[in-house]
Length: 454
Image (cartoon, rainbow, N blue to C red):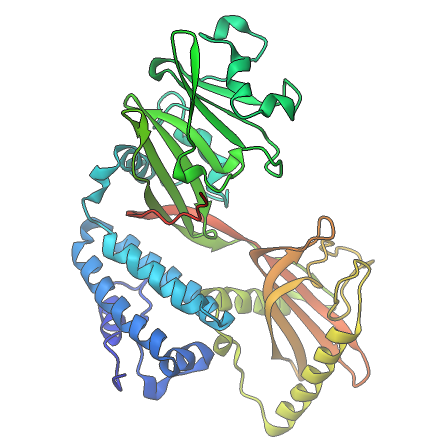
């Protein structure tokens, strides 16, 4: 590993080109924070960082009018990298490898290998705000289908409407035994009459029967069609779709890799068999919503503003180093005591949901954002906050909630601040800043990456 890695080229290039830039390279002799130190100490991560700098430089040279989008996306990705490296394990290496693959294929002409995906990419470029705020690509399949959009998703006739079928619909249901497991009105049938192709799915993805059954027909005879790779393993209908584009049937699959990334995989049905699947990765900007908070102080204006600034800065780095404050030896000793007590209470307290609680929250208080936000942190870290003449304990992390007994975590950022009097913690402020998907930025065609089973 070189003393000043090649990745420094990336930092210099970004800083010279745009004020949006935020470089990924750094001098290992001056590494700050856990993430930089971890990358420098790990041979694999260090080599991947150097490889990334070359991939970025090549993409930079090809960017043309999309240079600003590339720079903004790279800045956003660096926060994702920091979060992955902080998680440990192979998360850091994976996020590097995925990014290198994306950059190596970005701005290439490979889109011609999948006309449908090329059309989707062009539609997103023309309508960058189509998915803003949704958070999940599958929520906006309708934006890509129908009149004036990219493809058709076929017609959905009722099973009891015999005139809508050129065959007996029960023959399609019997192909997989679906009719024997679910009520007759539960399956949904999709037909592409001009292509003599159809599919039937059931909503219950937990069923032992296939979610999708595909078929074709000639005259009045129905024949089963094997599932494409993109429908294996069986995924629920909301993560998959059948489409018709330029006279060709495609099986589509959508996988979101977080708010900043979506993957659409398309597989064409040509000549009576499925072709090779091709994946397109779409990248989006992200942003934090206005803060929602509760503050127990008499005058909360400045404290609330400081809390919002802390979350905003942390969102850009995802590195604990961004939370550092200068403490005197006495303050450091006090914070260490608070931290140890807080960690002790983490393992000793069980809340009303039967999960480990952390510290007292604001329940039963007026104006409280009452969603359990300040109990349910994920990937969190403790740090000190200097407020006026006090040293307070703060906790920041991603938000989780429990609609049932299952805990669901998001990319929303939570901040809790407590006062310690030597005996108990008292909540001072709790803040939620929701993270949302912004405008579409970039897309690239990549090799298919499917979790398949035969």
